[in-house]
Amino acid sequence: MDDPLGSAKAAPPLLSKPQSIFRRITLAVRLWAFKSFVVLGLFALRRLKSTEIKKTEATYTKRYEARHMLENRVFIPKDWKMGEKLPLYIDIHGGGFAITDPQIAPVYPFPSAVHDLAALIPAVLADPDLPIDHSSPVAMGGFSAGGNLSLAVSQTEAVRGKIKGLVPVYPAVDFSGIVPREYKPSKSGKPDVLKNMGELFDYAYISTGTDRRDPLLSPIYAPREKLPDKIFLIGAEEDVLCKPAELMINELAGKEKGDRVGNEINWIKGGIAWRKVTDRQHGFTHMHLKGEEEETRKKICNELYKQIADWLDQEVYGRR
Image (tube, rainbow, N blue to C red; front, top):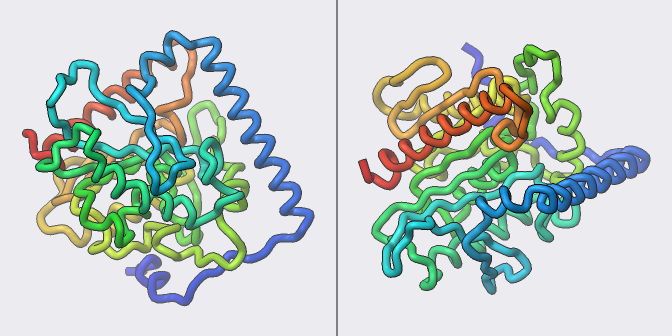
């Protein structure tokens, strides 16, 4: 039986090739136009739906000396009581590595974001002002690029061993192309949102000469011992990133003891869990629809979030 991942792990570095000046200019214009569109869109959304957005605003924001230019959002439950200690979940925002924060691509390409997180996370864990229950394990995750970064930073010396569980949601796990970015077409025929964006985000995040098989860039190559004990990976069936994520989670599950419990799209084996959300594209958790389609999307998201919360309570925090 072929083992493309095993063969690739033993192969020499796969270096990112330079592009022509014309192509770089074209991608740069597209990237900054995209960033401007997103920033203006978010500004308009905050203005038009300020009341709704306030419901999900952070309790407060904070900066750490380790990376003082980066703002961190702190969310504390509304029913929290003074003196109460809470388990910690660190969420890394998505955005194609190139949307909102100052330390993002293409000004700060890979591995800048990984190094930023490796400096910030120990600072968060040592913050005496946060109501962290230090007797409880720590979990971390993120959506899309945030999922990739959670898998990456957990391998670094500064963070390894400090995180017990990961929840990467439709993450990019492979920039080497070991798995073709194929996906199930949607019933409407609408292509996945990332189908024509991959080259743009590659340009933004990956410099010429970067090893595309670097585990901090492509976590599909990460040694099992460098990743946290517990990993719950979520993919979207109509997402171009789903097949690489599924290959990675199957590879990790193969190193676990015992049998899988569940079915092909929703299973757990040892410390590894997988959920493939059917009939959904990349970003479905954040892209609102209309009418009945939106109600269906909300229902799917709420069920997924409950599953994640239950998994964290049982497998990571040990509260069940």
